[in-house]
Image 1 (cartoon, rainbow, N blue to C red):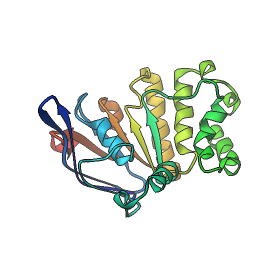
Image 2: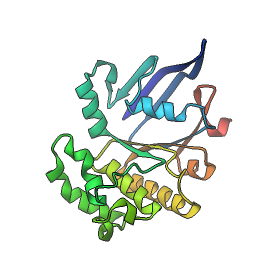
Image 3: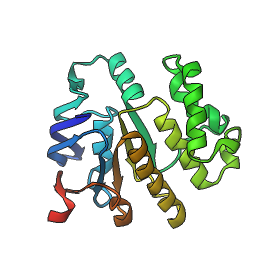
Length: 225
């Protein structure tokens, strides 16, 4: 099991009120799963991804990554786990405008000085998504769909166990959204890659072999709602 989230609770203060967002939430993600999570804006989808991605902490509950509790990890260990075992794709590509597509993809390798060893993988990834002839272009010279594919390659460069995608198609037109979803499925099939994808789009949610809905702070199977 790559990810285990157990009895997660998270709330926010709103004036004098305490507003629960996630309540006794549980989620397991094995290798090769595409888990899609639907829910309206404000339901806690991004909060959940930030918690399982170690970018935020829960008020209660436990997160295990590859069987190890993140609660016992130092800040340096957490940073290494985040860099080596998790990949992130967001609605906005967050590419650095002053770097080429190639340099953006290799950015995560700079943290632990693995850049040289990852250049061959970067070359293979650019070939894989058909962008090898665009690798030396800057983000401003790429289309919206191309920029998001580069962001996906950046998420994959360190061979993560799990990719977390937060509303990845929210800023794309219908055709580019379809291409991105096809790419996620292809990556899952070719590399046995696990994904957790949040979305409000039923067409995006349909690619999941597990389709969940965030309701009242907990996860339910979409078929049961």
